[in-house]
Length: 250
Length: 231
Image (tube, rainbow over all chains, first blue to last red; front, side):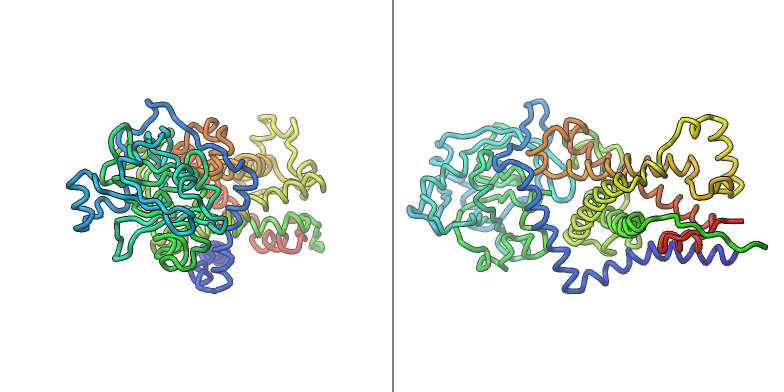
């Protein structure tokens, strides 16, 4: 019986040992490279087996979440942002610059005056929850066409008005997602002007990726050739500080 | 006492996949529990967040079952998404090889006579008496073994992979039928958890039976292929 017990301990220890050993393995540079490589593998696989313009599922109005929860920054609460909020963002501007032939600086009413897309889509947080809501705003491609993106531009960086742990929030996407028909700069949620917890006055919707890619409080859209010189170089706030994947398709 | 008889029981493809898959399953369960810790509530339907009603709420899973052991969603996702590829493509390769080398057909086909109540009752009695091998055909799997292997290979593992794919917003766009089939993304997430629970149960029962059947002989047979027939 004692032999039986020791064998059982050995097998259980084997299984438990893998769980414990993982933390040691994850400190090795080779392991980090392999684990980090999964992101590229998933991106390549997902983009190979789905169409470039495959549309995210759109829902019926009655399929929306009763309450659309917010996450991340609930209120940027900087003097500058508060001043804008006090005037209902009447003087808010969003600039489109960087590698463009004709930089833009648009007032909020100009953005709201552009032809808009309405889409009832599902927002999937990296934490696991989902919420369904209706978003309204112009296609990002409309702004990029107006600014005339240069051929050297490969990414769009979204600079945000909120700061988390002292750093400005930012996110980035590549041109596949930038020109996707459902990628919009939303100014309304569920037929009301975007509230502050959900990113007022403008937030990005990039419907085939997880929630942290959907930059809120957007004030500047910068076209760049490389992400290396932005922030810590990984393409986004959470990518820089926590090691989240830049491509968040799963 | 006669000389022990050994037979060649597991081919190299089966053995290789067994160990690769064993590591993948354990890493996926551990990292999956850490991912669940980020939002330890499960829902049915298309959406589900803090204001909605979950069907189950967990306490945080403790560090001794999670990968990594302290809270780190980003690292847990890296483990999970890496080993998801090992699990998925490993299973695919194993299935192709097992069709070609007739492993499925020879060892896992459940015949009609295996399923008669008398046969199943006899097999349950044999299990309760800790006899796991038919002395007439020691190399063959017994019927309970066949049923559980078929359920895990063609049921739970593919279900975990399908529901895992259905959690990807990018794959949802490419293959919207997945969510239609599963009843929405939060249902897919719940089913993913239930499939993983079933796989965990299988692993536990499998380990217990390996020990009861003779851990050294069983583990060696899965390493070298050679298995000693019990006297």
